[in-house]
Image (tube, rainbow, N blue to C red):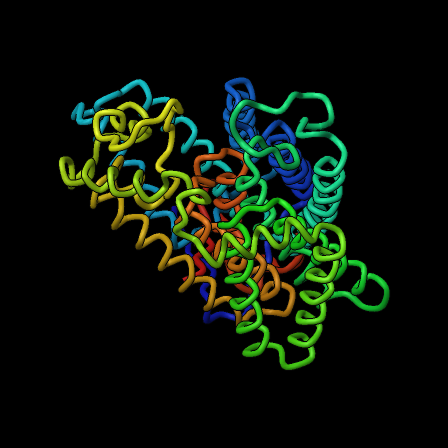
Amino acid sequence: MLDTVYSAKSSQFIYDGSERDSRIEAFLTFALTALLIFNVLAFGGTHDWTIAVFELGTGTLVLLWALALFLPGRDSLYLNWSPLYPFLFAFAALVAGQLILRSSVYPFATRVEALRYAAYGFVFFLAQQLLGSSSRLRRFLHGMAWFGFLLAIEAIAQDFTSNGAIYWHFPRPESGTVYGPYVDHSHYAGLMEMLWPVPAILSSQERGAKRGLYAFFGSVMAASIVFSRSRGGSLALVVQVVFLISQFAKNRGRGLVLRLSAAIVIAAAFVYWAHPEGLSRTVATLVFPTDATLTGHRLDIARDSLRMFREHPIAGWGLETFPVVYPRFRSFTTTLFINEAHNDYVQLLVEMGLLGGVIVAAFLISLYRAGFRRMGADDFQRSATLIALTGCTGIVCHSLTDFNLHIPANAALFYLYCSIATLPMNVSEDVAMVLPRRPGSVVWIDPA
């Protein structure tokens, strides 16, 4: 039996879970957080063994969550509904169609990538079910604030002292510019674009010394993006700051805008003091963004990719088939293996066609529409939603010049942020109000 027990127009929904249920869900939240952090520290989750751990880990957590629903004494299934689910299901159906109809030019690569996207879907689903409690969401965000700051300190120290070795031990690869645990500095920047807003925005929730501490965390994390010398990361950071100031000015008044502006000035001064040459180079690359010596062959790859798209415009060549097909269309000579289009939107059109492009565009539009609606919720949830939307804004912009959404650690955090941005409004703590329940019923919490 299906009951809808919550809507945005109602006052509040409070889950009436038992203390045991809360412990189980707290453990699953901790395990999910640990898995996300492991993925970041394990070189961004790009190796086969880290991908296997991530996929098995997310699948196991979903299974444990499902088993916990059927423990004795729990009468109903509680499921948070996200307005983004239809687009996730539509994308999955499109990938399944590529495999069933054999339209993918390399079905094996499509199947392998489909498993990874299933893991991202599991992250989205788990976040939607587990972080609906403000207490768990608060603990998760504070934990990510500390993790992001410590990672930024490690990355900056490594940059100055390791001569390009990851963790001072793993040698510099033949290609790529190492930063933090990532082989490519732009992917580190993509991660930090999602992490720095956490302490920066949470500082508005704090008082006294903790407010200053979190503002400092955010400044150091934002400064590390510039230190990484990622052009796309620096541009995305600028867009994020403008987005954040506009939201603060609209929702919170001048005081927070002034504090954020002060934090930005402190971060810029810190960057200039610690690494003036790096800052000068970053500014130069932003002034001349189409210089071939700075951008490599990104524009050539984009033009070649559009020729690929014109041959299969409806459903594309198949998920994750870009590196297989691209050599036939390459218009320049290189000894390097071109594994991605360095533009997530162009690659999406190549691999998934117009159908995939429409689905993803609708997904992003619905994400921001749902997120902006939640800005009217209570103060903490408004902050959590703003964190998620600011992080997503950074990746959405950076995806124009790189392929952060093909890095498992970054993509997983992006989908988790999408889930946070669409959590039901006014969700409170774990226990309180008793709702009508019938044995075996399924209770949907509909945020629409």
